[in-house]
Length: 149
Image (tube, rainbow, N blue to C red):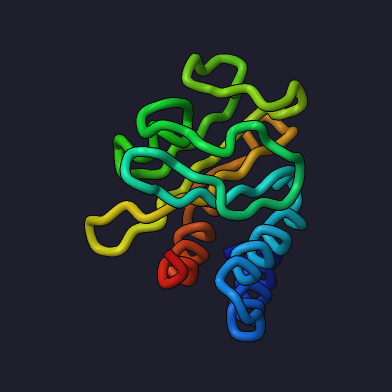
């Protein structure tokens, strides 16, 4: 794991220990992740019935506070129950545009067994910003956040 990722994971773990309310813990995790290079915006969505509902974020404000399952990159992750990495959002017809600056996106599911609980959605202003190292890192973050959903 990259040194930046290792430090961020330790910071998330510390925040989960010290913050009081679940909402504070989620917001702290978003803030920590958003400080990583290339992580322009970080959003945590919970799956409620068949809709993703924004629970916390850090970075740019999004108008997408509720996303139906199956819609957009976030909804695609719910349908496939797997991470989705888009190197160029402009070339992906599923992308729900929030702003013109976003160039790439990664969505990582937060699961408990087979249950899809939530997801980590990260936008970047850089093309092809996310790779296998980001997936491995976000898998570890997702494990730590799962008890909050």
